[in-house]
Length: 413
Image 1 (cartoon, rainbow, N blue to C red):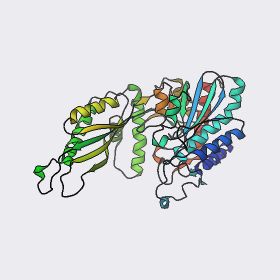
Image 2 (cartoon, rainbow, N blue to C red; image 1 turned 90 degrees about the vertical axis):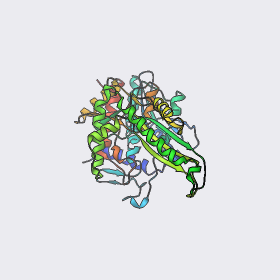
Image 3 (cartoon, one colour; image 1 turned 45 degrees about the vertical axis):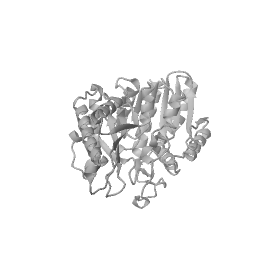
Image 4 (cartoon, rainbow, N blue to C red; image 1 turned 90 degrees about the horizontal axis):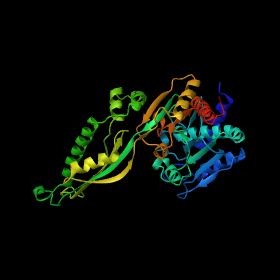
């Protein structure tokens, strides 16, 4: 039997899913208009900050003074892909047997619905009691880096507080305390052209690039042998390994917890795009590779890049494409402890995890704001066909976040 709160959360999630906010192009105007009107109907005013046309960010606040707790969720979603592979249309928001289906249901319109309802439920009490402030932020651009969203808001000091909850999907009994950083580079090899029948007259850039890739991997392996992970993250890495393994086994892959434990706790190495040459009977004088590396806490992305430059000197140039620092919130922070308590109130064992990718939480953490990633939906369902979020997850994460805010702002003893 679904509770009234469950029905409301499912319906709100469905309404959000039905509003196409695919990124690219990332136009979230319509979904932000819906959220603004929804809040207005319940007596809350909000402000819009638009750094890039078509990518508005909405901020609503209640209460006054400190402490300030931020609830954050992004409104953009990834493209649906091949429409024929969806059982139900990706923007239908169908509610069937306790699940809300559609693109963004898990990542992360279910999470946005949860924090909208928490904000609306607690807002009047916070205004009346004056025990601090609650900020609701529905932000743009996360699926392509968050530069026109949370990053810009944090830089402008529009989004600031003493703690934050980002309602990305973790599942109701798990919470994310850390994210790996990013080192994305382009390796460029240059050679000398010649006729393909006389390769000795040229200098083959593709062959040089192949050697550079092998040397780059050896360098990353050497870095990984010397990594010392923060002790605070060992439990999170172990839990994450189990989560990712479950998804892998469902897909028929024969992997182990140790495989994932190694990948999560080390610098990953993924050559993603390779280009080179112009004609089969020419010695190529140019070749390039775009390399994606994810960096765990305890490792500096810039140090990884510097070591690659030293190793590949004379063989390939190393051009930086994008970087971000690994980041985590210590388990001793109050926001973490309250989330754990809230999960326990739902009758579950709270499990910390680490994300291999990045969320908008990195911008908040790097600003010094203790941040926890916690919301409805499973990590392994994000960006998939037939994406869904369960009503049970919506309700349990709503209860946990509501409890956390109440305790943090002194509304509950």
